Amino acid sequence: MNINRRHIISALLGVGLAALLIWGIGGKDESERTEAYYRNDGKIFGTYYNIRYEAEADLHDSIKHALQAFDKSLSMFNPRSVLSAVNANRDTVTDALFEAMWAEATEIYTLSGGAFDITVAPLVKAFGFGRKSDQLAAISPQTIDSIRRFVGFDKVELIDHHVLKSDPRVQIDGGAVAKGQACDVIAGLLYEHGCSNYLVDIGGEVVAKGLNDKGEPWHIGVTKPNLNNEGAQSELQEILSVTDICMATSGNYRNFYYEGTERRSHTIDPRTGYPVQHSLLSATVVSSSCMRSDALATACMVLGAEEALQMIARTQDAACYLIIAKNDSLTALTSPNWEDFIKK
Image (cartoon, rainbow, N blue to C red; front, side, top):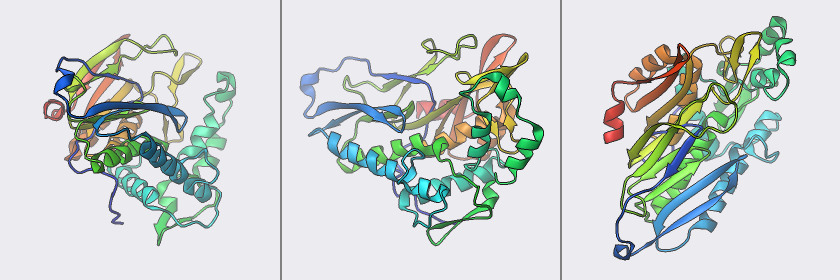
């Protein structure tokens, strides 16, 4: 299926993570600027957004309208969204945003060997990570096997703007690409308004273009996983100085539970039906769009470090920064092309 990604800016490179700290530092005289830097903050999709940009006027209303339009297409929590209609088996015509998500999901599903699968939602719900661990441990192999009968991207098709399912219980979850895709949408809006310096951060997924209000590259801090605390993470593993980049991160260190002495993350492998059990704690990916970075980062977390590096090596437009737990300490691994992407 060949669907144009109309909201993706080809001039940008890709990057992202679920836990990023972003700010600008430096020192260029503000009087030299002919345009002002604006900052728009708020909440959307159950998370936050933080958008900074240099423009002739405040674009907050346009940004808010674009985010609301995105919510009406791909939100699982908006009962009137296109995605909700698909999941409720209501006959609905898909829109451009939904189809762009579908095209990316199809490609990453194939690239990852099924590790990335937007139909995994019923398995994630079955493990219910908001409940107590003893309830989680009670899920039987028979229950998982029964759910897996209607999990799999091979059980759905998009034909003539309609989603067809082999089983009505199939559920689509675009959450693994939504924040990244929304970043691309807002970056596209800013580009169309003539902005050449901006940073779009939605829930930690990022598109950065040009320079900050001090005339410096944007500085992005990658959070250091805290294995002993599920609470706020504040220590930084790495500080990146970047421009013209799209970035997304996925992590396993915030949401997990213990089954006996075994630590299980919230990341579910759709191929097995169970939470992944490997040492990879965080995957930050840069790619040609933030949506693609988001999907690849999720795929990395399912695959584990070794297979993640192999997958990234098969792409021509992505690089990754992985953090693994090793002997009660943290080790960072990068794809061979990581420095090329960051320096570029």
